Length: 255
Image (tube, rainbow, N blue to C red; front, side, top):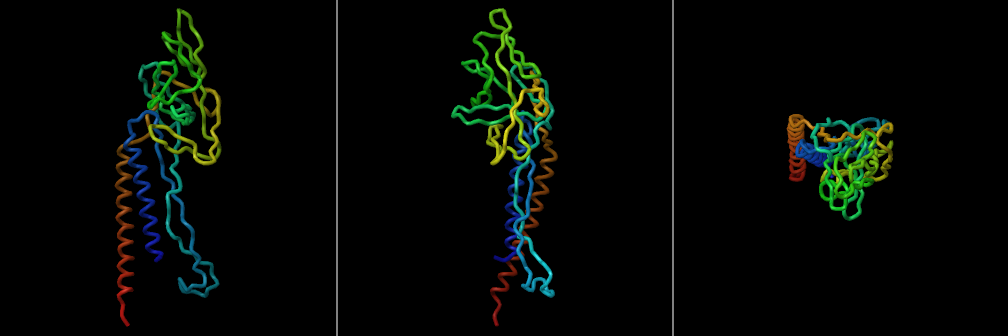
């Protein structure tokens, strides 16, 4: 395939992926616990042009030509959002890099920083979609649930203060990342190790009760990025069209 077409098509595909990331950020600008995605690109394989006379030279120099770019990953940096006070006792925010681990009704384990929990009929804390938070069980009829910064959960039942569980946080290992699953949930990328620790332990953060973490997404910045990606898409589309016209002219040549 003509190298100009190959590079143009790869650029268009990469830009479309970046547009999807920016659109996702914009759609979740008010979603508590959402982690902004940042696209990261990589260069595709280099084509060795040595000895092919492109460009003209002695043939002894090492020459290569890039074949385009692609979206390599979507990086996410937890802990960048600001916690806002809600006054609701089952709203929890993590001040730091830690994640809550929740278990979906089907048994799948996911991670989230969206701490808007509620009680189900069994006394468990559940997030949207029925994802259950491990380690906490509130007795029936209990009141005044309190969560300390180190994750210790207590409540009042029968006029006494009782222990209701211990929250555990998780953070990403040295190498790896998370992949958005939907519903403000994330799963580890291939080869990613999730480290377990109690709130207050170095690197995991602390728990804030009655607060929710707002995303570090600025709608104006995302709109500007969308405009920039649109212009880059138009530029590369024109490059593809020009390469196609050149090929059409070459194919129509007659001796």
